[in-house]
Structure formats: structure tokens, C-alpha cells
Image (cartoon, rainbow, N blue to C red; front, side, top):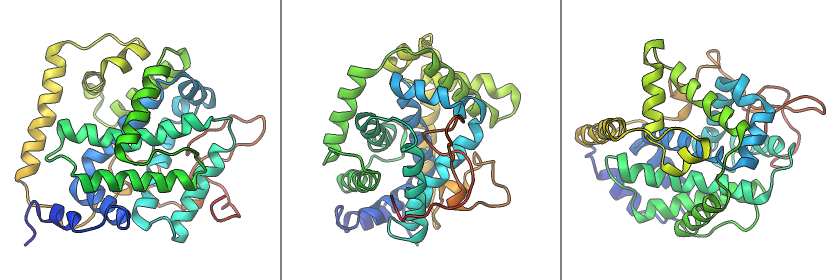
Amino acid sequence: MVKRYDRLKDIQRLHPERDFLEIYRLTVTYEFPWDITRALELALYRTYAVPSIGRLLDETAELTERSQKRYDDTALLLDTVVEHGFDTDEGRTAVRRINQMHRSYDISNDDMRYVLCTFVVTPKRWLDGFGWRRLCCHELAAFAAYYRTLGARMGIKDLPGSYEDFERTLDAYEDEHFGWDEGARRVSDATLALMGSWYPAPLAPVVRGASLALLDDSLLEAFRYRRPGPVARGLTRGALRLRARAVRLLPPRRTPHYARQNPEIKGYPDGYEIAGLGTFPTPGVRGCPVPGRRTSPPQSPVD
């Protein structure tokens, strides 16, 4: 019988640079599937507070008019690489789709690198506060190696090396670039509304309030939200810490849980094709710099 910390011991026997994909997959799909989903949602949400990112997302209208589809496609494309790896047909197709969409827009290398940093740093910080355990040094190194690999295949330059480098890059970028943008606020409001839509209607205000209670002051200031009171913050964060204690007492997961199995993914009840995920922008038509719509598969492997 697998005990609660046995999988951590397995992870610590692996090499974080050579076995980064296996470590990342074990951590994300066995140890923390629910937490990593929430952390990556928060990671993408943080990027809206950079005006150049939030403004572009508003202009595409994908997050304000087709929020569920955009959420689904983003999660499914990223999940494909986790499940199948970088060098499989499925993984290469997913990365190719991501690249084709991003290259349809004038997105700076610095913004792309910052978004990548949020995927590395936000899960660690989430688990520090709300996980049933913290990430070990092997996992942190593997997270950095995983996203360095993804970043390289996306053509992002000057990638950070270690986890600490990712963290320093993220903090410096947010200090310099976080700020108010009207379009970014619309994207933020639409995202909060989407999260509320996953629950019965009477709970939507509660979900919105809990979501705001989890935001740090820099995000609240950038979007000009009123700062939640200590009671709202205490209840929300306390509930997550209680959940973590309960999870620690549960038997470990026996099978992997991938993002495609999450109840929040609602747009493909009959299945989907990886090559058909995301948007396919054409001149004069509003599209999206991140996943949104189906069409025929692209031609080159990972261009």
C-alpha cells in the first residue's frame, strides 16, 4: 500500500534535470491536481495586471465573450504536454498550436517570459500557503526545467535558469509593469464571472468574494478592486488551510488526474482533437493570443 509520503520519496530519488517531466507529472497529477489547477488559474489571472497583456486579451474578446472556451482550450493544450510529453505527436501538436496563436500577435519576448514565470512561481507560492505539503527542492528544480523546455520550444529568449531565477524575474517584472488598464479590468471581471458560473447561481457572489480575498494587494491595486476585509480573507484562507489538513490525512491518489478530467472543462462533452483547439486568427477578424477555436491541423512540427 502506498503511504502518504511514499511518492515524495520516489520523486527525491529522481534527477530533477534529467527526469523533470516525470517529476512534474507525478507532482501535478498525483500529489496536487486540485491545487495546481487553482494555482495555474491564478498564474494566468496575474498576467492581466500587466497592461500590455490585459489590454491585448481584452481586444481579442476571447476572455470577455467566449470565456469558457478560452479557459477549456488553454487548460487542454497545456495538459496535453503534461500527459504525453514534449516529443510525442500529441505534445508537439499542442506546442505547435500554442506557437501559431501567439505568433499572430505582436507580443514581446519580455511579456512571454513573464507569463512563463507565473507558471513556475505561482504554484510554489500557492502550495506554501494552502498545500498539504510544500514542494521539495527536486520539484522546484523540475518545475524550472519543465518550463525552460516549454519556453525554448515556444521560442522565448533569455529564459531563467533556476527556480530562484524565475522568481526574481517575476517579481521584478511585476514591480515594474503592474498597473491599471480599463480593458484588463474587463478581462478580470469576466474571469471572475466565469469562475462563479461553475457553481449554483446563489453562490456566484460568494465565489467572487473568495477569489478577491485570495489576491495580494498588488493585484487588487492594479485592477482597482476594494481590498477585502480581514474577516473575508481569514475565512477564505482558513478554509483552504483546513482543506490541506484534511487532504494530508487522506490516502494518496492511486491514479493520475489530468486537467482534462476537471469538472470546470465544459466545452467538449463529445471529446476534442488537439490540433483543433485554440483560435485560428485571420486578418480583420478578432482572435486570441491564447487558445480558443477549432480548425484543420497545422503543417510543421513545432514551428
